[in-house]
Length: 425
Image 1 (tube, rainbow, N blue to C red):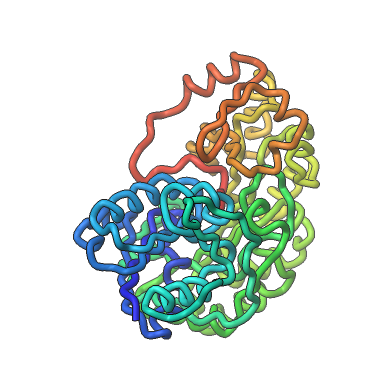
Image 2: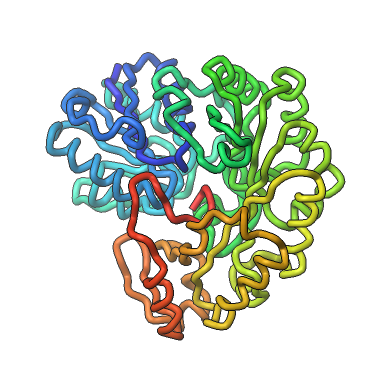
């Protein structure tokens, strides 16, 4: 048996479902599991001296440096602890994280790999653990392909997490007109689409892992019992499978008629599903997040969105006509816009009556070029002046005035405020 500390730093401001899934697998294998969510609880150094295995969740770029800080503090307090990273950005950065800041990275789905690693650390024998990129004796790490099991998932264990009311969501409160207790589930992991700026594409390469319906139902029931009044589907793409989400919503509405929902989907899927939008409203969907990116065909083509500017406006109308609020996200500052494009952006906002619904932070979003981004092979990106950092690249716009405007309007960082274009960045 191993003593395992699971650490989450930031998972979009929602209860960390990745840690909850991992906890189930470890507990059922007989390990002693403690969970720390620094987003809610802060850093608790008193937890670091005891565990044999510390697994740090890195699902988003915003969790990278906080996760590294935890790894460094664990190493100082507990030199014998085995440190591993897991999650989407751990997969993308497997050789950089494991080689310098930890002993390994889980590459792909984490549950079975973490359980095997805990068993080995507790005295079991496993020379090769699938999905584990591990540092060798010289400190090097060999990159490995992701492990993507399609079965064996169990209901996430939420008993070890902070209570749901510790994860407020301002957008949900705003749309529903009052304070809500918000929970979260993922119908699927990954995304079929290949938007070149997206870290989900880099981690999953167009593949999707579907969560079983019975597990999702049990998890929602559990969260309702914990006081949940609104459920966010935190998938990168709600329509990864055409009917999976709609079938689940029908079952949930029958069992919990007062529960409300939001989800994230692409513009083209909103158009494809226009006939079912009214039903989504009847089932309790109150708003839909969609990445509009920027109303410029050049931008949409450069990032392989496979939609037109006209499609953006059509999708907005479809959602509104169904009585659902649209929650648009943008990559406001990107290498393909001109200063004039930023000026005419206001015309797009006014024409589509978006002024009251755009989160102000969206006006400050900037294209994030992470290490491993497919965009780095693009001729337009290679033509930029790039500065290589440890986990990303800084870039300069061809027109210095655009960068000057970005720095002029950007607000100082605030605790708990993350400037991201979407939930999975």
